[in-house]
Image 1 (cartoon, rainbow, N blue to C red):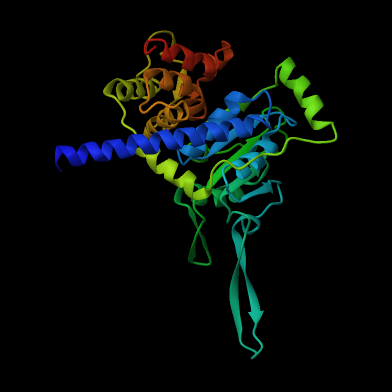
Image 2: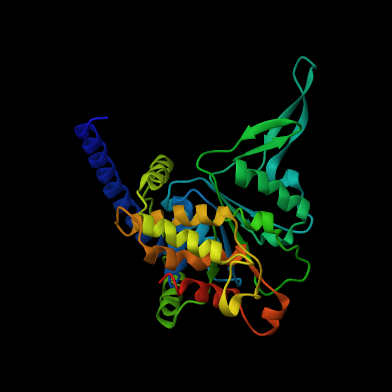
Length: 333
């Protein structure tokens, strides 16, 4: 490759990055025009989708988690569907099933009827209320982007993203997600209460004669092009070193100081991969062509929080995972 060709490729990437960054900022503004007081949640959800991953939204009822998914579907030009997870939900209710049909000539045969998982943006509402068997039916779809029914493999639409919700308080009759499935989520996004001004705006906007409607900013093809671009953004050695240092320091045996005996299990290589993609997406949304160490620090908690657990003794002493991560990022920052 000649120097001139390399320069042309670099210019093309820069031009594409500037265009995509403008689209991403428009998408963020369009979502924020409908979802008030949850800017961090919007940003993390958008970063997750631009990274090609899935997000677990943890928050109390009534904090606009469902509305966020519906709004993102419109703004990003994706087909969106919702599944309400309940204890009696079966895998076939998610994936679909084969039905026996008889043709006009009397011949019988099976036809596959697709379930709601065949969409581009799936909201798995209260995912921990379904049985482990049903939860595992979603696992293959999230990781491999296809499902297998009766020995036949069926590809899911592209792009495919899962935004699952979970209530942090009401745990009666729930089945906690296994670590293997938690690790499939690129981020855990905590959804908190809006501030006073945001809640005031919510009151006026949602109880009047007219309510703000989301406006489309991208198409599904634009989104997939943005996801490909995210993977092409350069990452400096300092950022790579920060990611590796942070993730490896969160594992048992590698922790020093006050956390030496506090961590029961920590993040694997998938956490490093998630951070590598997420920092690129965050930089792109901000209009930067390369991520910085600040991006690693900002995304450390949502990427690592669900990928590590504290020992019983540490929890008895009042230590939380958030405290542990804050301690781990101090040497990096």
